[in-house]
Structures are given as C-alpha cells and as structure tokens.
Length: 155
Image 1 (tube, one colour):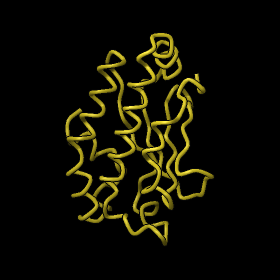
Image 2 (image 1 turned 180 degrees about the vertical axis):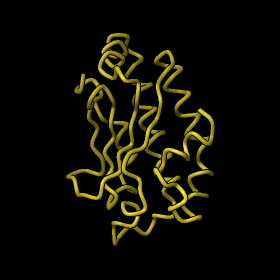
Image 3 (image 1 turned 90 degrees about the horizontal axis):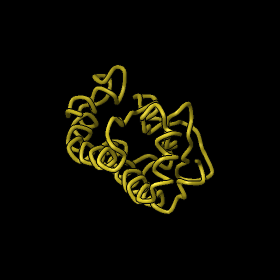
Image 4 (image 1 turned 180 degrees about the horizontal axis):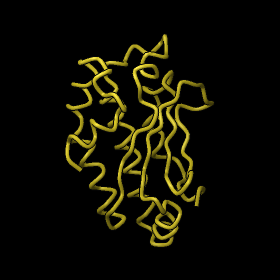
C-alpha cells in the first residue's frame, strides 16, 4: 500500500474534501500503512484496508462533530485498534484460520455512516469483509474499546 492508495479511497471525489481534512488524512497515512502491515504479517498477506461512506456530506453530517478536520487522526485510531484486535485474536491458529475463511475477500472496511447506532462502533462480517461501522456523531469516542471485542464471536 502506498500513501496515495489510502488518500484515493477516502472519497470518490477526494478534492471535494476541504484541504485541512485532506492534509490530516495524508499526515496519518504512514501510520495506517503500518497497521495494515501488522495485519498482513499476522494473516499471511493480501489483506487491504478500505473506506466506505466517507464523503463531504457524511463528514459534515454531525452538528456535534467538532473533530471533523481531524478525521485522518480518528481513522488511524480505528485502524490501530482493529489491527491490534486481529493480531491478538489470531494468535490462536483456529481463530486465525476461521478469520481468513470468513473474511474471504481479504478486505477490512471502515464504514462511516450518518446514522446513530447504540455503540460508538459495530463490527460485522459482511460479504466476506470485516466491517467496522462508525457513526459520524460518535466517531471520535470509543475506538479503543474495539480491543475488547470478541472477534471469534463473528466466526
């Protein structure tokens, strides 16, 4: 994954994002690439990080979202804790095998949504992808709690 791969995924029309947001995303790309490397080191390679739903409308959707200019930083937290969850859970060979089988598309997705869900995030396996659903009105809080999620409960 090169640095530009991450930026190009943020929105179909990346230039529609404000410059301050694009710069914040760019600043955190190296750390996000390190998290992806950690996942691939544990799982044997071929996995990718993807973004869904991160458009200017979604970024600006929450009236209480005072951190929207730091979306790259917040996203890095989600990638970090998701990578740690996968690395820790997949130390067990049976869990690792079940995870690789269940996430057959080898994609780990951060999906940003303009809706409220009960928690600060939700983890699901959908169409062979591991998806972390992040409501924009809570995206800055609770990312560290992913570390306590029982990944094997999805497998």
